[in-house]
Image (tube, rainbow, N blue to C red; front, side, top):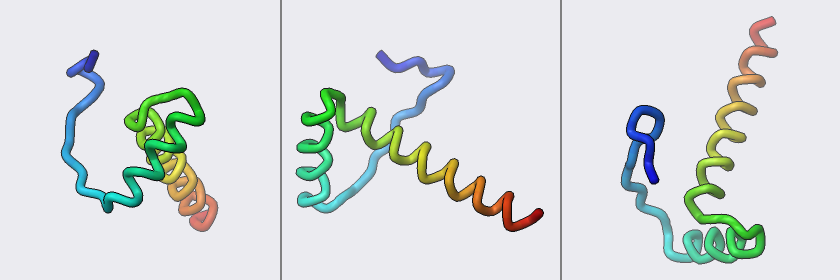
Amino acid sequence: MINKDVNMRTSLTIPKDLKSKLEDLAKKEHRSVNNLIVNALYSYVDDNLNSRNKNKE
């Protein structure tokens, strides 16, 4: 269930082969493709923001 106060739906177009790889990985990790993508995006954004903040110091 989507909590509209916290989450937002969006459409994303990705290559078929990437979708297939995401589905395989999510299945191996016993989670949804959505959860896998959200966590990957959080990790990417956090890593890049931390990197930029370190470079400013």
